[in-house]
Image (cartoon, rainbow, N blue to C red):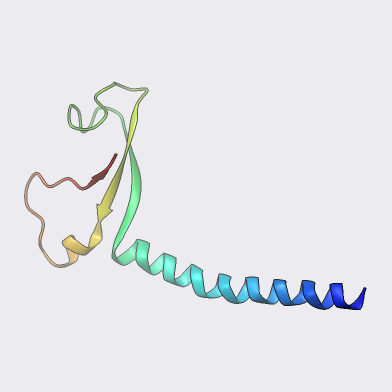
Length: 80
């Protein structure tokens, strides 16, 4: 019984260590490099959402290019 409690504590401790490392890295990546978003509605038709109101597309919002001023008119980074 004592071994099971010690094993459980080790797993919980390892989980929290990984959690406190992974969360800041993930937040920094989503804030500085890129994030994924869903496009709904007719705002980007016919390039995105060609099916109408019921369909939605997933796009990659590239923050890195914006920070380096490498954006050109008409650029779309998307995931299909």
